[in-house]
Length: 454
Image 1 (tube, one colour):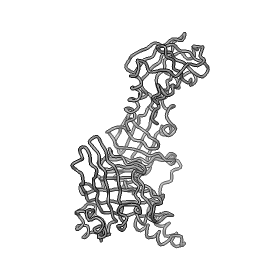
Image 2: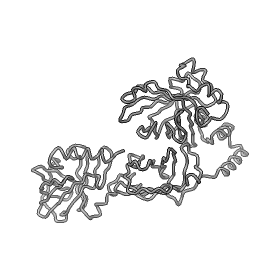
Image 3: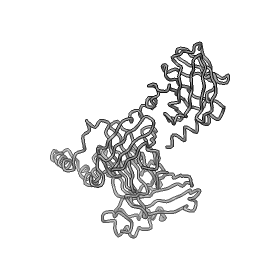
Image 4: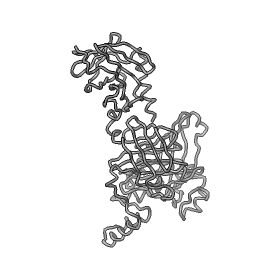
């Protein structure tokens, strides 16, 4: 999310339309030039396309209101224009080259020009040195909530399992957000200062090639995804560290399970599901169907640009899906050229009702091939009962789009649970049989290896 480039393009298009930045919003009943407003004002916030830019990112415009209703405007390239100004109790009107524009007064230290030139950009100006010049004042509420220091208390791998503390400590991450959309990050001994950050809704990321880190805002805190040397980690930073209660240790969970079993509170399906993957939910069928290791492959179709020669390419792959107690989960896939630590695809998912009892897997946040291909909410809707492979037992098909500066393609991922044969697939479409199927048949009755060919 290159926020600065996006909004600056919009603002500069406004600037280049005329030699001045402000134009015709009308006059109003303004008759005074109060000395309380005299001073130098800078653009401190710009809002457009649902994105808020602050401080230097807000355009770099200046307005000097002088005594007697005179003044000067300065563009970010140093170009200046003279102006006249006047005000009433609620608005200020600037007259530049015989054109009036009206802004809403915010006390005596700031004013806001709405929908500049009809381009959808709202610009706020604040007096130099005043409290109104603090950029944090103009952030949306979800971004204001970030302006503080966050420290991690949990570290898990891409499938949600706790990481060995000798590999990555639970408290290895700290992040401090600043109101000017910069941040300081410390993770596993690495320090990053003054990194630009962006937020869109509840999702945010660091706008830099120095570190691969992003986060999701939740009421309880931040879930932070961090990738280093091909390995993915997820940290949890609580909103209120004082009230944070760590998850029960495995021994305690096992003891609790035994107690519930003795009391007759745990059903047979729950016992089986815990044995398979630790899944405990009111809707057991999601875990029973999805929480497994998988084998299959993926196919490229509709390739354009630099990828045209890859039309019809197929890679065999291994995958794992974890389902959590709140019906969210994780999907990870690696092909015959990749590894679980450097996967082909990784995605947070959720599970909901579908056309069959198996339900439906929905993508939430992830990537395919690389970070250029972001997988967002509902980009995948995987319903086994409404699929081109629904005739095949326990088979799923995931469809998605990849696009970068070089071209694009459509991808299809075909998977069956590890241990099942593909004889029914041969009758539907033998071209979907993985190249390594013979190897698979020799291994399918044991645990899934970490690489095809092992």
